[in-house]
Amino acid sequence: MIRTDSSSQEHRDARQAVYRKVTLRLIPFLFLCYILSYVDRVNVSFAKLQMQHDLGMTEEMYGIGMGIFFIGYFLWEVPSNLMLQKVGARRWIGPIMIVWGVVSSLTLFAKTSTLFYSLRFLLGTIESGFFPGVVLYLTFWFPRTHLAKTISMFMSAIALSGAFGSPLSGWIMGKMSTFGGLANWQWLFLLEGIPSAIVGIIAIYYLDDGPKKAKWLSAEEQEILVQALAEEEALKRSQGESHHSIAGAFRSPQVWWFCLVYFGMVVANYFVGFWMPEIIKSGITTDPWKIGLVSIIPWGVGAVTMIWFGHHSDVTGERRWHLTVALLVSAVFLIFCGLHGLPPVLGIVVLSFAVAGIMSSISTFWALPTSMLSGAAAAAGLAWINSVGNLGGFVSPYVVGGIRDRSPNPIYPALLVAFCCLVSAAAVLISTRKNRLENLAADKAGALA
View (cartoon, rainbow, N blue to C red):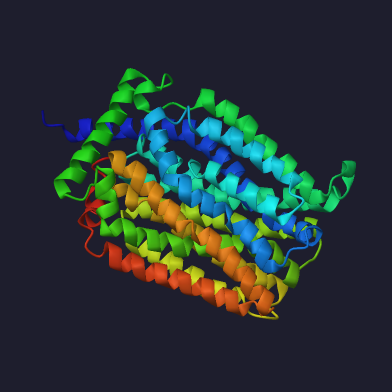
């Protein structure tokens, strides 16, 4: 049956209405979950202001503690994502949130470097299933043409976790020193771990495993989503770009290129995530509460930019140059972050541009691998890309900490991180130059909408 222009428009409007309904149902809650996840992994950057002295750790030793989280993350991410696909989001995301909240709170007992390392490693193994699991989960609901914007809204939690978490962490570090017999960094871990466990309990009852199990959707709305996803899968297969098996994902050269791209992005992300309080302390203010307040600015700019960037990428159907430009902007302004003697206002502006570039690149990036992977390959491939890429989260604090022990000049780590962004930008251009499905996205952007 051939649809008239009027019926086609009605069909598109109906789809858009369903997408909006799903977005309003899922994204705010997943957004909150990701804020808690990110706060629990990077609050060590504020704890460092006092914890490093209390435990007698060098910059390099503390860098190992921050980074060892990602070794556990690397080892357990693929199995965790395959488990999510098998048992469903409701029975997987909720329980791991409960456990990571408990482990994060237990870090208050880390009175030795060995115990600190052990708890950070354990936290990484538990959190490993969350982010790639959510990206996979979103592909159960949204077609490719809506993913960049949807993922960017979800991932803006990274930036807003800094905007909200930084002043909270600064307040705890500044106001709760020795309160109740605990050091300020002990209160930090305790108070910021509890909310994750509470929200994890809620997630068990709130999340559904797909459109067909969502009681808050009508039968017609469920069918609209199922049909849209089926059409996209048929398009992938017709273009020969979709990998369905786990083995197919690991054999794909593009998956390995994406690992390299994401590695450089993660190095940059955790450079600003772990070291921003130190950067602000060295150039703007030494007061923990004020450090937290100043941190709101670059993280807030990053949140707004990444949402706009993801939306623009979806509207134009273009990914390659959006991602490349964002990485180049990151590289340039990261170098400026390493310059001595910048006025405080200029320093905040430079840091804001660097964060904006990093956040925009991360949100745009995930629309690329999700366009070429499906089924079991998506579960394994997305987890593997995130897993290998997140080794950059170990390399970044460890190497930067080692450099800072040997030279106080911040330009050296800044140059290294900027170089990683440039390598990622080059890898994007190489890995996507023959991606026919990516080129087709602009022409098909309205067809599946």
